[in-house]
Every structure is written in C-alpha cells, then in structure tokens.
Length: 237
Image 1 (cartoon, rainbow, N blue to C red):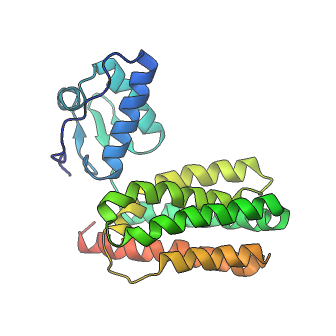
Image 2: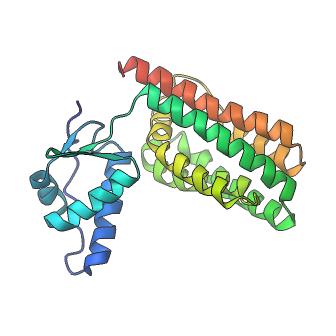
C-alpha cells in the first residue's frame, strides 16, 4: 500500500463557480496522481484532501467520482476512495488492447489520409521533437509538456481513421496508460531513441506503407511495456 506524497498544498480558486471548482479540483487531483504526489494504492481521506486542496467534501466527492470513471481512483463501498494500484498485469492488459485498437486505427488512417492529414501529422511531430530534445536534460520539468505533445502526435497519426469508435477507445486506453508512460521516462533501464521511433513511424505513414508503419508502432508500444516492466520488477510490483 502506498502513502500520500509530501507535496505542497494546492490552493484552488475559492471564488470560482461550483462547476469550475469541481473541474479545477479534478484536474489538480489527476495531475497529482499522474506525477506520483498521490501514490498508487494510497487512501484518499477527505480530511487530508480538504486540507491539501482547500475545497469542500461535495466538490472532492464529485472530482473523485470522475477519477473513478477514468480508472485512476477506486471506490470501496463504505470505505471511501483510494488511488488505483499499478501493476504489470494491468500494464500488459492495457498494452495488448491499445495495440489491437491503435494499429487498426493507424492502418485505416493511412488509407484515408489526405494532404491536410499529412501536414497536421508533420506539424505534430515537429512540436513533439522540440520537447524531446529537452526531455533528457530536464525530465522532471518536461514530462507534462511531453505528455501533451506525445498524445497530440499519436492522435495525429490516427486522425484520418473514419471510425469514431476506434479513435474514442484509443483515447481512453491511451489516457489510462499515462501513469506507466511517466514511469518509463523516469528511468533509463532500457536505452531507447524515442525521437527516432516516432520519426520512423511518421515516415512510414507518410509514404503510405501501412504494414511498416503498423509494425513500427507496435514495436514502439511494446518497448514502453518492456521498460516499465523492468522498473516495476525492480520495485517488486
């Protein structure tokens, strides 16, 4: 079982409308779960959360309920809320599902993509590349920006896929894997060239080599699994 990270008190705007305050509380809680300030398995006691975020119980309950819907928090009947655990079994399951969905979406996107899709993919890669160049030197302060740009790049790859359902499911699974991606950036147990991996997938997609692009994307996803698996094994998870 984890413990609550020390972290500084997070002050939220007291004068915000109720809906905005719930949204701000949700986003702050989510970020603290993602960056490990609220550790996997830790009990989310309302007294601690009220002191930490300076918001009321009803606001916290609504924000926590939303996080349950994102599989980041678990709700235990009569026992409150807890940060969802992370595990190798969960990572493997999410990775298999991501590959099933994302590879098919990528194949369809390559087949349907036009010049606008190509241009937006190149632009997303360019934005991601600028963050990747700085990530190795300052991973602690660049992870949030990298996560945003990385998500935008993978969304751009499948943007031309005509299946709304595939893209929606991919987005949900991608989001649930965020904690594991952040773990993979925190350690270098397996050397990898993330920038090169992204470039090779993009180049194959732009040349409309769907088989190659899908194989490279699958390898890219599997390498994150390999990295995080080793880290979790070292931590005894």
